[in-house]
Length: 167
Image (cartoon, rainbow, N blue to C red; front, side, top):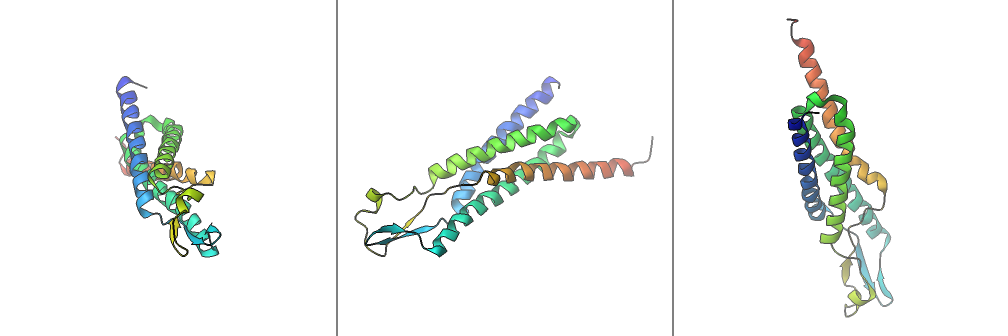
């Protein structure tokens, strides 16, 4: 790989990490975490609230798929000459972006209620649960989105080159 290509790879890797920060903000804004209900015995989650925990993971996956698809399409079009080397780089870059989004999203989002945090609340009050990703497979949507974008770009470029008359 030439120096200019290496510089572009580093630049686009930093963009991917930056998109992890954007993904964290989107995840926090779009996710609707489960809500604990305060009772005489403490804070509890009912069955419907437990579904909110799945929704948080689904939003993380959706944000990751869209971010990965957009990044993969743009970078695939701009750096297509790197060929097969794009595939492992896309996976590593998007896994890194997903880890950034996960950590920042958990940090920026609500924290898990504790005995101290529910003390002083009245029965019937609600407390949001933390943003959590509890399945490693959720992190795979980020690189899969990027690889889908790369696949589409490679396919379109292949169609264009096949449609050109031989020189």
